Amino acid sequence: MRNLRKRSRPPFGIFTKLAVLYIGVGLLPLMFIARFFFQEFSENTKNILLNDAATILQSAGGYVDTMLTEWENETVSLYSLQVEEGQYLDDILLDKKMSQEEKNSTIRRYLSKFSQITGLKSIRFLEADGTLHCVSEVVGKIINQENMKHWITKETRKGREERQITLSPIHHDSYFLNINDDVITVRRNLYDVSSSTTIDHYLGSIYLDISKDVISHQLYEIKLGSKSGLYIIDQDGEQIYKNENQSELSAEIKKDILYNVNTGENQYIEDKDSYYLYQKNSQGGWVSLIRIHKDDIIENMNTTEKYVMTVLFVSMVILLSIYLFFSDQLSVSIRTLKMGMERIQKGELDTRVEITRKDEIGVLAEGLNQMASQLSTYIERVYGAEIKQREAELNALRSQINPHYLYNTLDIIRMTAVTNDDRQTAEMIESLARQLRYLMGKEADLVPLERELENISDYFTVVRTRYEGRIELKMTIPDKLKQVQILKLVLQPIVENAVKHGLKEKAGRGTVWISAKHLDNMLELMVMDDGVGMSEETLLRLNNGLTKGVGISNVRDRIEKNYGPNYGMEIHSTLGEGTIVILHIPYSEKGSQDAESTIN
Image (cartoon, rainbow, N blue to C red; front, side, top):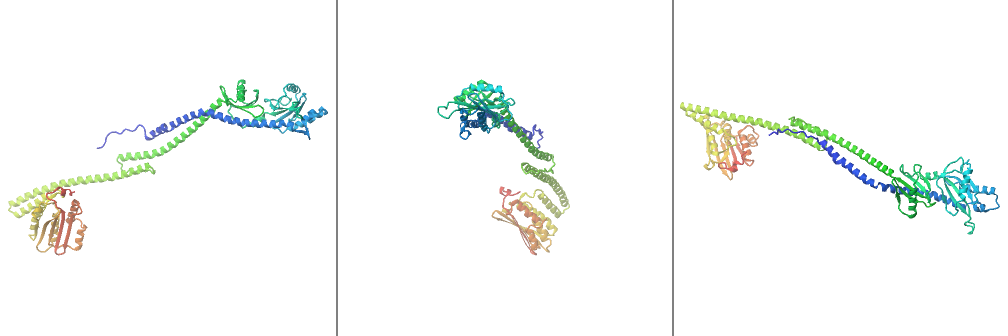
């Protein structure tokens, strides 16, 4: 029964659902997971940056230590560097016989030997009595007498106990009128080491003015944030060096750092906006420190977040593009498949879907095409069978109407013959009417053997009259076999064939014998005539079923169809002597259940 329920169109197509599923199950969780891991990463950013800063500080400290070591080695050469062969600087300073002019010239020549120091701007040597000897590495420098006098006064008042180098903060080189460089001054005191008794005798101090660019150049490769920077301070808290973009360190920060450096406390300190990492240098009492501004940490995290989100967004766009591309390719095939199915549903069974894909969609398309082809063939077969069935029903109706009409007509003729006292005609008509009544029914009906023989007897009533009694019928049938069930009309065609082809052409009298035997579970029926017989070629064709349109072949087919290949027909014939037809069918009395089960 056809389902007339209206099919509702789904509110969302499969690709819409897949897209929602892709975004809901794929992309959104990916974003949340990425965000979660980024937040976890952000928690460790501070430690990572501090560790990186510690590494940078160690590297920067190494650069500073290298410079300080170089300055230490250069200035200590005051005790080993000779002015002349066997003559040292202390010898010149203690020589009372040398004139001041000669001494000044000799000392200036001696100081020129320090010119190989990197970044050196000027060299000064201040004797214990305040006499100054000066050498400049820059041509044309003019001494600022007032500033220099003020400096000499300040230096002569300082203590003379320091035997290591001392370093000044970065300051302007204000000792010269036309030059104003930013320099670091390295100082070392010179003592009389000619004997153990004079070792504390102070002779003077050497001053090396070194450009601050030396430090900047050494620390140029160190990259920090825009608000972070590198500092160098001494043990007095004086700021030796800082990056140009950095503000001054507060006194409190300096104090805390110097305290921690000298006591070995924390590795870093923190104020409201920065972290400070520090390291004491090996020479000069300097402390190198790095300031990590918290804004740079946040900026670093923001940069990382932007990078992660950008990569994530680009990845999502690429994944979504790939999804849309493949879903579009897939949707075209599915829409084609859907339209084909809709056309087939409308009855267009010649529709074929052309899809060249080798995947499951291609298999579905091939299956749909095969289904349409098979459905078309099936419908044609069923429709043809229905037409044939209707024709058969119509023919059956006609076959029911015509025999009744003929039977009634023959009965009227028979009554007329009886009225006219024509007994022979009446007998033949009555025999023919009984044959018509016997014929009304299906060929597959089972009847007792006795009923089939009665029909043959009625047939011979007409045959005897037609052939003027020269053809006779003889039947040898045991009474116990007369109730055995056989197919209706299984003997009639054989008897007719014996009369028509065997006895009709024979000159003189002829006989048809019918006999029956019970062999195990089989009934053997034999029809024999003494007619003209048949040639071996004709006999061979009959036994092989090659002769079409003959009643004998039809009987063979009916037996094999209804009883199976173990039953059938044998034909024996000799030309000029006659023919014997033997039938083998199952033995069944009164239509037993076993016999009926073999009937189609």
